[in-house]
Length: 289
Ligand code: IPD
Ligand code: CA
Ligand code: CA
Image (tube, rainbow, N blue to C red; front, side, top):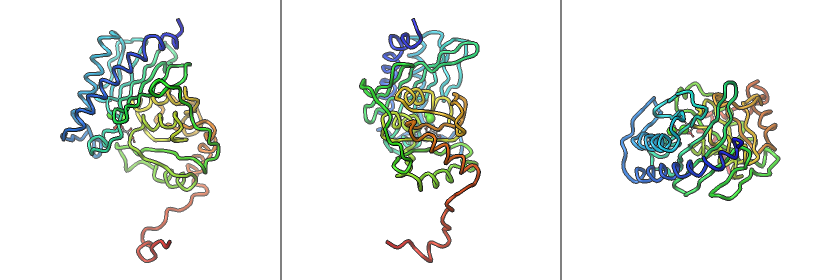
């Protein structure tokens, strides 16, 4: 049996059930006032993150004993299995903690051998909209069971794109420059607060592109496979292949990928940048209609 056939027959239905159960748990917590704890200056965690990962780990252990798991809250369980799950039990914690209903459960499954690793199955579940994105390697991507595809927009200036800003070492992120330049060259840039949902939104054509610095494997593992299976493209910022530990994620519908890569090269080289407006000037000369 090929890995994609195995994924189709055995993994996605179980992954979907686990993600739905964890999503229902998150919704239950969402309607309560939870204590916010800090992993870093602006890196939040709640009881919901921990409870969701605990549930997911219990379900994986019961149904797929021996599989390894890398989860955001509990780290890596590594027994040398050829299967590794990447678990973000709550992607969008800051939104969740503030009552902003944009968050999800993200589960990616990788099959590893001595020298290669393939993303073979993925689900991302948004419990607030009851939207379940899924994909199997080589079998396309789906939203609530219906096939999805990336958008057909080929001009960067007609695109709606998305990005995110890291919560860890945020003062070191140069992303505000990218946000500014790409905003001026597109219909706009959204910062919705869940990288997994951003990638899925490119997969189903709501966004045409997405980038972010310094994402972790649990943020990207599922969304990248879903986007690629929907016909999209994911690379590093120089166009080289995306790897799970790349820490550079540039995804698109494929048609505008080269244009986005070009913008990134220009910005990294400091060429052709529209200067950020000087805030000291604004009070003296506010924008006129
Ligand atoms: C975060 C979200 C956010 C992204 C951050 C991530 P978390 O994940 O995906 O959109 O901008 O970089 O850390 O902490 O909510 O699981
Ligand atoms: Ca995350
Ligand atoms: Ca998380």
